[in-house]
Image 1 (cartoon, one colour):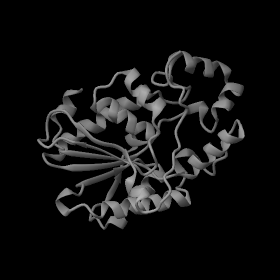
Image 2 (tube, helix red, strand yellow; image 1 turned 90 degrees about the vertical axis):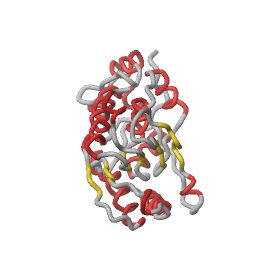
Image 3 (spheres, rainbow, N blue to C red; image 1 turned 45 degrees about the vertical axis):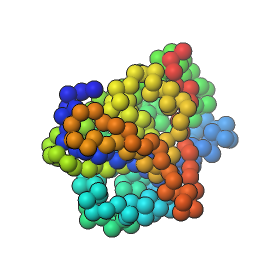
Image 4 (tube, rainbow, N blue to C red; image 1 turned 180 degrees about the vertical axis):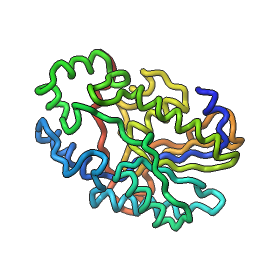
Length: 253
């Protein structure tokens, strides 16, 4: 674990995956149909929430409204991607929190480069050399041309965590982001190995609008995972829980 993380003054870190997006729905439909291309209405950064995703953001906000004033986050920071920003803004507004949602491009989803908008079937058919290279390297270190590896994403997240120092002792922070980003926060905060984080990625889908929570009561030392991928707030309100994960074949060959 980095020195910056150990010295950070924040005492709580809440990680939220965005609600279901139109892109999630389109990707699932394409996979089921065996299609090579995912038909999305906009570039990845501009894809909006689905109707279900909006309902999930509202349910998240209602759940967050139960937080007492002293336990509310002092800062809410979102990925700049529309689906994450919508989730954050709807949730904060519904919760009635007097806090502005800020954005940070380092929380954006992993960039896929030439693989963008392709299903895994599409990659196999159209870019077989990339498919083979990805199998050889595994998901953590494979960087598609024009895109990022998971290791690249982890590097930018380390700098996010280092800036918690500037917030001062006792602060609580909520970050609204993406599934791979949440898994890589776990990788950093818990000092995982490549295999350990890929084992989680292969077996667990980070649910839309789920809550992952880390605490550190003294504001220093290691973070403790209090809850991971919790979506009870959705089921308790009768809102659909959706599961949109990436390819489970993540380990190097």
